[in-house]
Image 1 (tube, helix red, strand yellow):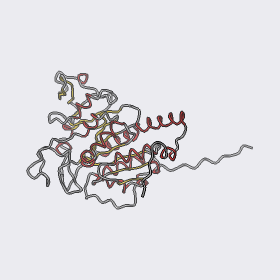
Image 2 (cartoon, one colour):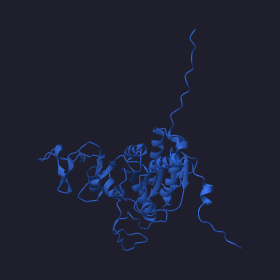
Image 3 (cartoon, rainbow, N blue to C red):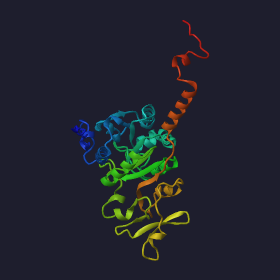
Image 4 (cartoon, helix red, strand yellow):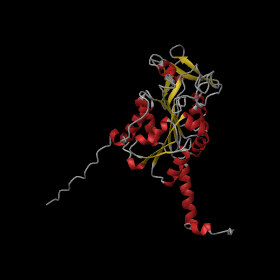
Length: 344
């Protein structure tokens, strides 16, 4: 008589609720941070990432309250140092997925140097930069991404600083995954965050995010419903770069510059640039990242290439050295070499 085997119990698929902490979310009503938090929780659920495998690390700023609101491991660290601390977490615990949540001030001013080296080393971290072009936590001073001429409490007659363009910064540092999303485009943001989570290596995502108290309408000149289709272009790998309400405009190269063309006026789709996010040469991605009032602003994945990671190389180096020389002895090391005794 055949023996019946009971089916193994099915683990229920996690939901967004599983990634919500019991902490009260204390951002200003209407802040774009709420959308980023919601999309991140949905992405974690969709990818069924075990909560015990997730770590969120932040610095200082409104965005840096993020770890409190995720029902995962997390660190709220010091200003600008989240990438350095996250690097240590990842190198010591390679099986964890580590996210850095930072703002334009935290990540590009106080922490600009840490960000630069994390990107160029290709540490397997996922970095989300909330860009509202202002210091919101300290009530409205210019940040590194504030536009020239910006009037704030710290620049009452207008900023005279040229702003950093975060995507261009990340590309120049040779980041292996670079993307952009918008707080008001939740489905698209989920798609980008999923791609970042699945990337092996450093993933940098800039999110255009509104601060409705100290910099309301920061991105409205791009994202307002009535103009959005003519001011934003969605990058899709392998597809021609088209935009406009009727997708009747496109981008092509004219010499070393981009230009907008109208389809159907002696121009066909075959004349347009085709997006290749896997191109090792980031020159075109860099050209797309430059803000130009005559061109639409790209969102989506600019670059996605595969390189060895810093944490992977470090582990391989340690394993190789250990196999040849054996495990180290810290006590022996400390008591080796030249020593001296400080007398009374």
